[in-house]
Image (tube, rainbow, N blue to C red; front, side, top):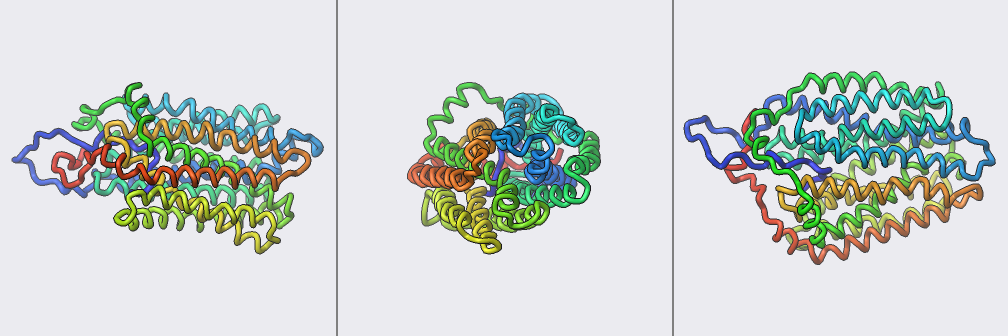
Length: 454
């Protein structure tokens, strides 16, 4: 199963009572208008990650304006911008997730996109660092309105047989949008200053938000909406008894820590410490490597996990574990390889770091019952960000400090990556039993699960 990010399976089953007089419905047919909605959500997801990584692309220029060159805490303070976004995103996401089950998801997405677009523009207007920190908090709140609702809209629009494939394309926007954020931020900041890197994302964001407000919620009037089950505290506690789920969450948390640290500090490390070129040049190359490596690895990781499943019941854990373990030595090799050859080490590290995206998310889906799957993804999202990329940028910035201890910081990243690999390999022995225990209630060939047009 391709990557998933917490899609709500509330329409995975419809009423068991079939109308034998109604015309047959193709179980593989999406809801009318689904493709246009998917394109809209894909574009929003691209801008979502563009906005996140524009900040990383222009971080050195912001630091030069707001801090003295001899400030030993400058890097840690800059890292707190990423933490501010993640904290507000994590806190607000459960609230918007609760609202998404009770009101129009398109309304929440539209309002969220417009809010984060305006907050991004306000980032460019910030006169002091404290105001910039506040705007990043509002960006997190806006993205929290979009994050939980978007994949559940796709789940409402597409039937079970096609939902996984469609969601996998949706999550391809992560490496592509991240790379575009580096490239766009670097080019715009180099020509017009770092503030314009935030201004340029405002108009398209507002336009996309308005288009969302014109959409109709696909759940309205459906049997799936009337029969949807809300998660309880008992559901959360039951998830902690699933060994595969716990080990997968732990591995994904370590992986998210590593990705968060690498993505935020790599442009600064390469451009300023290694002096491998201007910031715009470094952002362009790093963005290109991220989009190529991340895109191909995300697709290949899922394909390899599926291909090996027949021979190795724990294949998704094995692919995730070995992938990130292979990435570790390339992170270390990057530190001692001269540029431009070090770009090859960075590409290989990024490639194998993204190799687990599909398999690790597939584990979450396979070991949790459909009725609590959205709860499982919601809890996973909270954990991996709270203990992962919300803490890694400022922590690594603190390690580097004024003494420029970059090697020490990246050794920490490599160590955490190795921990993720070990946790995933340990989980492989439990995956088969936990998958069987979860059952297979999402059978696409069950006529009671056929998705009917809204």
